[in-house]
Image 1 (cartoon, rainbow, N blue to C red):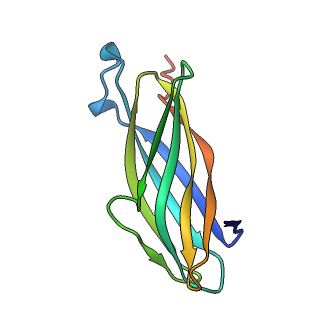
Image 2: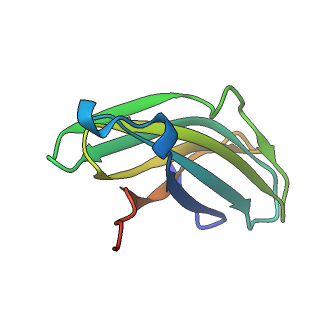
Length: 125
C-alpha cells in the first residue's frame, strides 16, 4: 500500500448547538470534507477510518466503506465534497484518520486526513 501525494484532503468543522445537550454531555459537530484529486488519473474512494478523541482522551474508532453511502470516483483536477457529523461527550475533541483509495490501475493507497478540532465556540461577554 503506497501513500500518494496526488490527493489532498481539507476539513472544516462546525458546532451544531441546536442538536447538542451540554447538560447531558452531548456535543454535536458537523464537518465538511473536500477531497481534491491533484493527479493525472482518476481515483476512487473505497473506505474510511476515523479516530475520534474527546476532551477526556477517550478514543472511538469508526471505519467502513465509502463516505455518506457513496464510493465516489474523482476525476483528475476535480474534487468531491461531503458533510457528515460526529457526537462527543465533551465540548472539545479531535478527529483524524485516512481514506482507502484505488487508482485506475487497481493500486490501493492510503490518504491521510489531517487532525482537526471539534470545538464549541467560546462565548465572549
